[in-house]
Length: 405
Image (cartoon, rainbow, N blue to C red; front, side, top):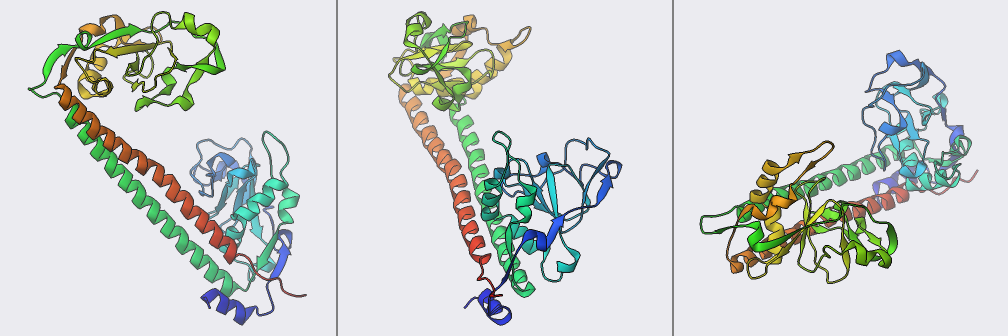
């Protein structure tokens, strides 16, 4: 038998009182002058953090002279878009905007109900599901204040409340510790990745000096924007460039009727490197598909001469320290945007190793990328698994048999 079971058996053997929230708490009915508030004690709905993240300091001032006051121990709820799960247990006194509800335990119930226990009840997924069920409005749903006060809450003996709060606090602390460890591991790997990236792509004296035009053809993309469609050949825009590869989730399509006209100058082929020469300067990506695609505006293309350079290495070299330094040096400031003078790029100097060494570097950096991707995907997966586990145990701990009246 757990400690909580022992306490329930001792203090509530016949079950636990269940009441509607309005029987033990109410909305704050006190007010505070705006001049008494600052960024640390004014709470607007924007500085309540989603997913039960508490609050951060406000970045704007109140827009009314008098506001609802809150006190230590009040539970503050964001009342716009309840699905964002914005909730905070107040640790200080202050004031909140009209879109934040300050729920305060009634004076005559403070011996029977602790603020910490009420916070856990009102930050449960069960409560937020109830709140959304009764919310009003489609685009910007708001919680129903009357319905919130009708939410049924358990009131176990305070000894049980204290033990449940202790267990849930410990669980949250362990969750935060694990998350910090995972993020520290990811940060360490990122530092390591950056070190090897620069070390492997920094030219050595044994590398051959040549020009970009000697190892690749340089093409300029279109200077207009096509009509986008839901299907058809890929339209590879600047926004789809991401860490040396294309994020096709950020790409669009162009219709078959436009395709032939659009790609008249150049159509991307498997193995090409595409880059931005106006916005997001220095970004490039490798095209790893053998299917129709169209080059977006303000995009350039490098087509490798495969006897001179490995196609994947060309993309890495573009993103490496030598060419990135040239990009910073040769970028021309324009009226509204800076740009790379693409017409001169063929003459840019570049150093490259032998083809076997290029392929070795590609394999090493691809392995690092795979490791980084695994870590980057495992962090949110581990976080979600922990939160799911936490919510499961929270619901278990907050579920009690009703007392027979």
